[in-house]
Length: 228
Image (cartoon, rainbow, N blue to C red):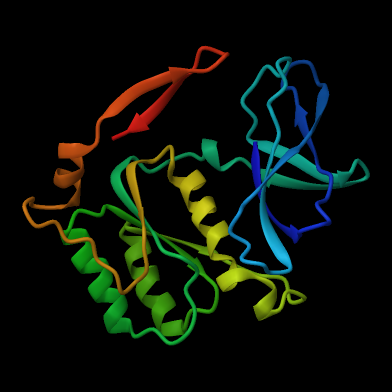
């Protein structure tokens, strides 16, 4: 279980994940470990990934996990890895939090051209989209081509407290969200296009030079894969 966090660099909270057994009616508490991103760019707030290992005694895949800073204060988080109707696509695009003045024409151009180039799904984060941009994305969302998620930053975090509206954390969130749904994921802005020169589209290009190679085996026997 991974949780993405924003926190002051010197004040990382302690978190506990509470997993409930389906058959034994037991609750297992696991203390989270923390990994800090190196992309805070000397700002007050840094990005962290909190990880809770599933207890060996747990006899089911959890759909809900309780997260608490103290055992008395709990919040329930739904596991995105086991959503019904998950997307199974070849090539997805992650777009950083959208804000500012963006024309409807540019959004449509980006979505249509990038589909021609091989993209099959787009993930957006809504920081401060205009109503017209939301309407366009709602149309493509109804077609199953787009997913839009709110990107709400706390009011007490100032513009200079955090690098570029939390973009690094949004990128990690999209990678974790996409890893079970897509073979390939690209991260780029609305004014960027990856245009293959010798191939019909991006997926055809990726198929020519991406190959999985087992480069090592960890202590648990799991294969470490390198794409080259």
